[in-house]
Image (cartoon, helix red, strand yellow):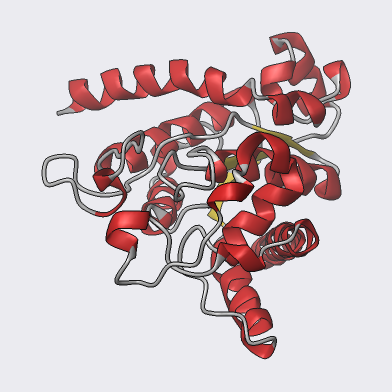
Length: 279
């Protein structure tokens, strides 16, 4: 089993580069001054850590169906952008490449997102193992605080468990003064804020690929990743055939900017709180 996990991790690391090299990634990167470690050389990363950038952001995405109107990389696009903005607001952080895969359903039984072409699902154990090993890699590099977060609902418990596992076992951290944290507010608190906002305006509950998700991608790159002629509301009963649960026709880039902004602010605020608790 350990061998399988190792091989999976290697395969994932190869695929990460492909997702990181999207146009959105280039747009928000800036050469040697970038907060994304994939843009830097190893001496630049080492120098950045020595200069005080001792926080690492590990943000997991997912590759899954998002209805006929939205590209499968939705979570990865949001994760890459939001992670960069979180790092900039913190001022002392660098971002690890987006984890592009997560548990999204049974491959054997073709449940949940795996009913639709293009979706990718990995086992929860594999997801957790890869995240844990990426976090360990950040610790080995010299980062003092490593923060785990995710844009996809599936895998949140695994992110929490990976952080707890590394915190509970000092021998798995090369430096006992370094720490690994899970940041749940980025996902859960934004969902609460979004649902309350939509309810106040009479917009149907957003469960998947609807107002919330579609708005965020409209904000990032509507022309590239949204098919406007395919926008249509869909109920939970219809989701089995459409992949959508909610009403994406109510989506706007302005809403997307606000929703992603909440994710960023929620993460930054909780990171400050977690660090304060360690003092």
